[in-house]
Length: 268
Length: 91
Ligand SMILES: [Zn+2]
Picture 1: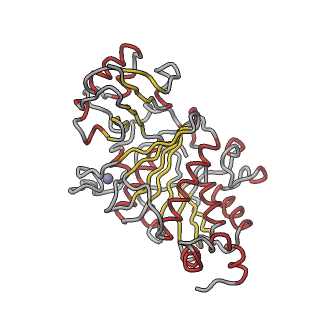
Picture 2: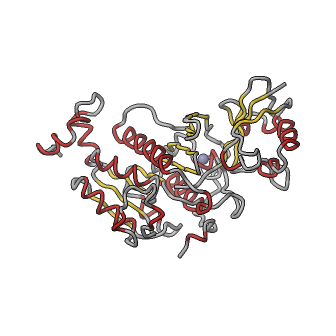
Picture 3: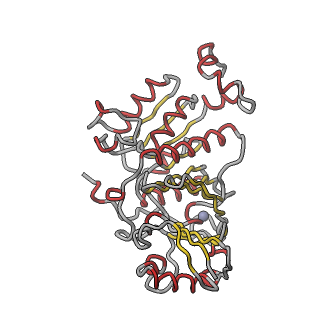
């Protein structure tokens, strides 16, 4: 692939960066990133990756845009309330950059469909809003050895980690099992400050860009924690767990698990 | 002996909205027992019915996860920073 004059102009401010250059830009244009959830995390991640010229972006979301999403889900706009989030995302991204091939998936991930969807992508971003999907995505990425950027938010807190299966700790090395339904406040009642989603979603986009370009240091076997009230970042170590159920020495996970839905209020 | 414990947002209801509390004890188990006296209800958020630490909340002594040290027998000392970090799912 060679860059057109228009592409050289569009991406000039990052092409001039050492570590990127024309080669790096070509790499981005031929990369495929799957974003799970066109919500608070997926929105900023998708917009910045699209702006940077990631060539193919898949977006999985089964929901429709609601008015109460717009406080943080900046992919969507008032006129798209009621429209599928994946379609709304495609529209917004293509307005920003028509170099990007956006593939919408209007569906809910399950143990049946997930492997087929993620298999063709270079890296996956988890921006989902529930534990069952998060554990399913982690397990599927480990099975297919697919790199995964994990991000989670709650009120004023955010967490980010990058998972390179086989090399670094996975989400289950960190938290072996999801909480049982009812023990952790649901996504609906909790609330979230929009900028927390923005900050964490962009940390994920940054991890993905570094992975695709093969530069810098990733947040592997580390958890970055952000708190907006104190404007404080911290990093704790996540040792790769030899006894991990999915990525340990003797993994016992033989079949993907569909955990019970936690935020059942959300289902319409 | 006084040790600083960082409380995550989901548990701050129990600590009266405080994000940082002081505690004491020679190990994590004692620290949590003592914390329970000041903030009743915190222990059951950290331990399950079988008195095992829950698998979706981790406790760190400085940067180290106690699961990879000596669990709740991990010794602590003055000046250590203890963090409680739960899984969060929002997106
Ligand atoms: Zn693991």
